[in-house]
Image 1: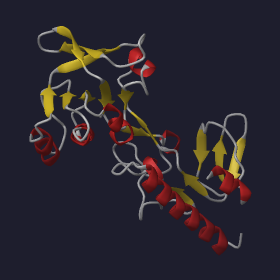
Image 2: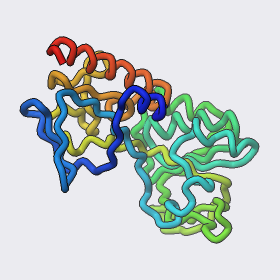
Image 3: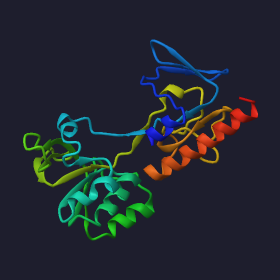
Length: 244
């Protein structure tokens, strides 16, 4: 896809967007050492999975630690899996993983769930899913073996600490949209996702958002690519109307 875009004249530049100015056109993107100006802007910065913040967790990403059940669930067919979280994302991940796992244990730090009733009931009715509440993950084993063998857990009510055998740990604690640089200039929802109409239009003419930075529901490569195509077509039409 990159080679194809390059054949049509697309230019690539690496950089970290520090801030933006969408108050006038051309729009200005501050990259620290330089500023890029653009007559239209497509925001496709995605969303980052929330992690527990454990060093062992980071070291084992791709080796039994994952934030994407649809991406990695198949690799743990016939094994026991742990899912961390208590919201709709966790219920959805746990339910999906029962297609592959012999057992899925959903671990939540509270005794109440943030998940919607329909999602929670669906998970509770699944015989392959077990619940472990009031429990915190303190560590992930085993970094030396470069595979997940167990989780070090702590019960927050009894303070009991024990090793919980499992072959994988999936995070279901949500995502953080990569849209902080647009705060105050584009509308966001309560969780920071960019608000769009018809999937791609922001409130600023000429600025479009696509993919996971505005999509909190589907979060799939194919749907992100689809909205990316829509944004590109609309940006082209926008420029054509201006005679560019």
